[in-house]
Image (cartoon, rainbow, N blue to C red; front, side, top):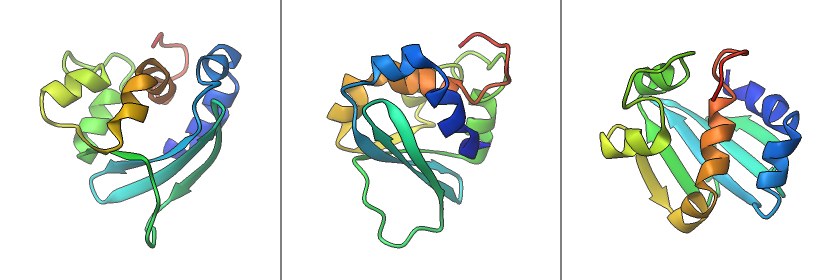
Length: 122
């Protein structure tokens, strides 16, 4: 499912334009599964599934697989509908250079919401 992120984000020109000053690589962890996601000027250039040997990333978003499943529902329950809500509930752990994450928070919120079922507003 996470592998579809590249296609869905890059197809949204408004989102790519929003991230035009964003170039980074971040780690997304869902339980024991990991993905390394590389972004260049708002476009996702690669989504690499782990296991990863010595990955290099700016920041990491880590949550249980069950929490990510709730986030990716068409209508997520309150507290699972937003990355910051998940952080407040202490089910999403963030680590690394959070300046990158916070400076482009709206981009990351909208990009990850692209993995919700098609036809559902973010």
